[in-house]
Amino acid sequence: MHRGIATFTLDTGRCPPWLFQRMVKLGREMVRVLVAEFGPDEFVRRIADPVWFQSLGTVLAFDWNASGLTTILTAALKEAIRHEERDLGLFICGGKGKTSRRTPDEIAAWGNTLSLPDGSVDNLVYNSRMSAKVDNSLIQDGYQIYHHSFFFSRNGAWAVVQQGMNEANASARRYHWFSENARDLVCEPHTGIVAPARLDHTLNLTARDSESTRQLSVELVDAGYRPLMKDIEILRAHASPLSRMVSIRKEGEQLTFLHLENKEFTQHPVLLEDFSKSRYLEKILRLLCDTRPKNYEQLIATEGVGPKTVRALSLVGEVIYGAKPSYEDPARYSFAHGGKDETPYPVDRTTYDQTIATLAEAVRHSRMAPADKDGALKRLTGSPEA
Image (cartoon, rainbow, N blue to C red):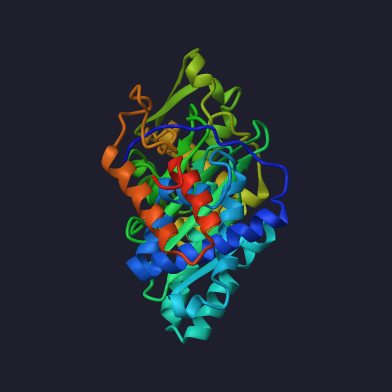
């Protein structure tokens, strides 16, 4: 996958009703054509492609670089297929804010309507919940998830499109998942992450390079509550300041503390954690030690486990046992196919042409007024008959 960045500003206004209704109307026609041509599974797969998702939003008349594209496009598509879901074999659950929290109930309701096996429904609900938890807890990039949408087909293909906001710098970040890519929910499960800029020192516990941290976290809770708290108490006792602590090496029962003045290390996101006593953190750690999850996914799935819990286990693993996680920002997708100056990378002509051709063909075969078709084609290609 190509890596790159693109401006993705945080919108504060509302989509005017006249624009939303036009997006619903055009979206309905395009979904019908695309599902008829490629099937619902393929439509779900394309939704999980950040470039394709962004292109579809642009065709439906939204600004290409606005965070509102994510929330409004999802809402428009959900409204567009209302009462046609069963015929299309395509279902959209969730949305923005409070609506996102109703996603499990909406999935369960569709499962009941379609008479899906309980195991299949439970699996869809689990994947929805885990995707939100992973992006909030395992990728600690400063973006809080506020929009979560879950797309799935009758055959069980699913995709997640969720978005987080960072109010401090007024920007948004979008996370894409697809069922075929997310067979391991805690190790690089994304099809793409769209961001305004790549960040320094982002704790990324989904990276392959964080495997030792994930494994050690499981081992720490499996060893029991007392040994784990002993390690945590060591960190608390020498947290003055922790930002100067490079490592604690265990040599038998001997502990060697190494301190260095290092500007980069001072900004270490885990070491800047307030590691003072926390009854809630200790409660969750005791719960984990009692239940002893078999793997990291089960650990993360445990109710109550959140960003602070995984940071605490990561800190113990890195500082005491030397299992350093990845601090490389996982954002790796640009809105652009490429640039004429080869920035952020050379133009991929094949993908570029396929994206335009697929969406243009869907517009031409839709049952829309000629003026609407011309407008959509112009937004997509720059001219009505390109």
